[in-house]
Image 1 (tube, protein in one colour):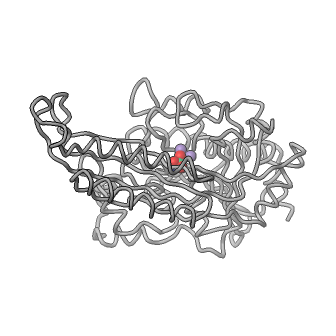
Image 2: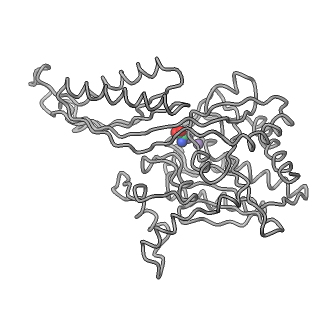
Length: 407
Ligand code: HGY
Ligand code: MN
Ligand code: MN
């Protein structure tokens, strides 16, 4: 299933599935088919999230949510997100084979956008599911100038009789009320080296680091590369490069802090023209919000100093800001019980990567199961989790569901 879904892409030759893209539609159809085979009722909501629902006998029963995201980064691996949607489907299929009837409803969620590739701001899917999509989210524009709101209107088609405004309001309603939910469990590859070092197939997540993302623009003066003396230049790329080295130096010195400039564009972008403008991203994370905030203050001062010394203009646009999230101790304790039953030993890890659980924590208690991935590699086509480790994770999920049923 992982292999087949991993071939559903917007770019032949490498895996890329972005918010509401044609490949996303095909992925929803493929995974929706597997959900139906497992006995789930399938729908796609107004934000493109795939929802597979298994009804309990008692209509008043509470709901357990399991899931992750179906979108990917560019040139992605096939486990990030996909594993957390497919594994619960297989687990529910296994319970069905065992004739286990769960006394609570279950929804398996395939969120339509977690990575923030198309619109720079992440979690549009789970935010939509939680009724947290705001006007700022809907106004964000992609590289073609299409806004989230317009993309959603195209996805949903004209809602006859409903004004666009009502359509937007529909996005502001959470899928469920807090009291109806048992919790949200997300299974995800670790995307880090700890489980491999500890020689464990799975571990549980204690907390998810906070993260801030920005778009920075440096504006100098384009000019002739051959005739402009070095001392008279206002080179936007040299300024951005000095900033990048300063960011890395500071992050290396502060334990727990990670800071990344992942995308950068230079204009006008000709070899014999001094860069007049540079636009780049900045991604800053730390397990503690105070650590992240003080890093952001330092980076702001650094950018101001560089801009002043080099005669550059610089602007910051924040595209995302999520505080650190602590997973539910109660739900996590139940997950630890299942990890211990299957694997013997259970360790807790902090997640440096963001996950839909960050947004879902506003709607329900959250717990996360991490699965070892080779070399800790992720956001890369060589991302890999072994069948043996996936089997351990599946057995933990089945045990967790059966124990929930016994609660
Ligand atoms: O970037 C992240 O933290 C995750 O892959 N969304
Ligand atoms: Mn990811
Ligand atoms: Mn992910």
